[in-house]
Image 1 (cartoon, one colour):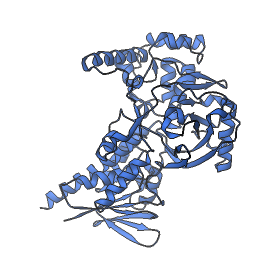
Image 2: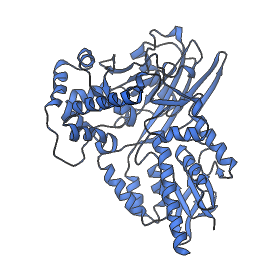
Image 3: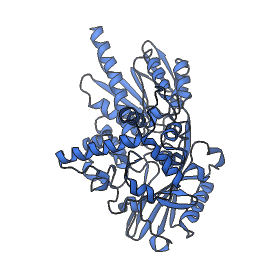
Image 4: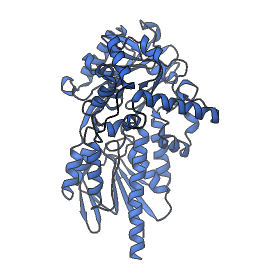
Length: 487
């Protein structure tokens, strides 16, 4: 008996789910992937612009993925892309934080974002002397006995002081989650910080212990204890952009007969004893045994509300933030200062409409022709959305104002590319782990239904890939068990 599996959502999550589903060999399977847009990949969209001396490679969404979570690298290996992966520039590695309108280099010696070297922190202008002294109190503060979750902001403030949180940790975390640290769940975002506190009695003690363990392990393996300081980067991307992963997945799925449908919008889904009925806006419908919703949580909830109202309500309660990226190209000779780092992040206390600025052509030199600079401004964070006019012209104005105010760049850009992502960044706010537990419990009532994407247990590309794989495993395990029972 052939199983029918339908995946709604053709971003990296849905494509990865289809890839891992077709690789299983336990049962015959027919796979269909439905995507509302006219292209595959979702936020993994790359714009390659030819130039006389090469090309500009512009990412509309994320520009890299981490190697510390193996699912991205593993998929690239399977797709034959491993040799095309490139790390960040090993020659220029500085990252800056904006404070009082000026750029301050991120202090060296950070382990898991926690300072472990006395000298760089003392010399840094990011924190006042009282703030640095307050950070040192982490050595003497006992671990909290409260086993409950707390916000990231509350935890870091409790251990290192409010100034360290606002000037150091908050901008780094906002660059990842575009969130409000005073709402984000520590357990859902940085659970290892609480582990350090419980195991070692403090963050600095714990970070020092971890660093020592890395050094000792390096002595036995012969590898660098700090791969980010050597030739091996902890961030990777394909040579001509992340779209290479999407393109390779689509080619693979097309070659094995997966039914790939673009420009296909789902109206809603109903459930009956014979499976899940997918109703399309064009009046067509699809009956499927297994269904994976690889769409934002609120979209998934809206589709299943008629037969799973409690589950739909939990999905709708996951908050999302809208963001945008604005990329601008210049001639290097027209810039008033060298782009001597990967870019900078902006604390929310600065009151800027921009969240961060990546110096793309320094971070990844292969993404711009020689003699040219590529910069990308990120816009949108929790609590500031209503302050932004979400139109391309207004977003470009914000980006140009940010570059002029911070970097002195007033030259007309050679080209610009703007990407808006409405309600794209899920917020793992306090209570998120408990909500996930309720979602998993609710899914028990609907065998064959799976959820995948960045709204649940990780927002990065490897997390999305893994979530698609896990959803497939859950559904196929149920089908295998059902087949065994029926026999």
